[in-house]
Amino acid sequence: MQQKSLLLEYVEALVVAFALAMLIRTFVVQAYKIPSGSMLETLQIGDHLLVNKFSYGVKLPFTHKVVVPVGDPQRGDIIVFEYPGDPSIDYIKRIVGQPGDVIEVRNKQLYRNGEAVQEAYIRHSQPGIVMPVRDNFGPVTVPEGHYFAMGDNRDDSQDSRFWGFVPRGAIRGKAWVIYWSWEGLGNVRWDRIGTVLH
Image (cartoon, rainbow, N blue to C red):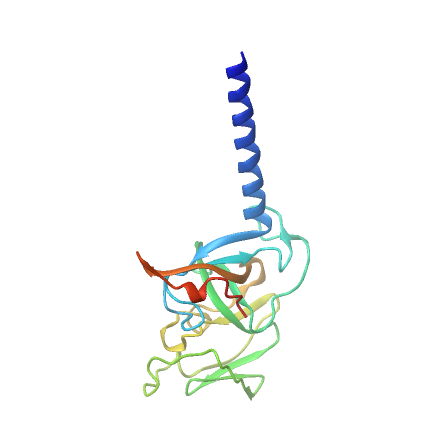
């Protein structure tokens, strides 16, 4: 009888722990791994980061409906969102345009509302090569309820220049902190752990 009661206590503890983990993952914070170089140098392949899902409000589970608004995405925020071409895939990019902004790229330079945007974090892996769409794009006006997102590694990023705007409801959260980073077994990037993302 005592053994059965002990087993029941373990099962109850596991159920409660699982329920708490799911609540935290659904509403507060979720872990993501960076699989590609589209956000270099800001994010490296093999970075593991936490995404704050509370930054932009609490959503009803399995929907895009915000029930407790907290704040709106801002220019410069690094966001995780459902890829518009396949919502089962998560993408990570930086917001460069909010609703109403006019976005244009001319010879690799980003312009917002007619003004050149100074971005210390961007990288061009092919500085001498200018290609249509990637390096000369727009102008387009960001519609209401949508955002324009680009990778920091501008020459190697599939982003809003290619597949369009990010709907507000598709944004899962704001990238917050790198909690682990490695290039492979035995090669931990200790200096990146604990980096808060801006």
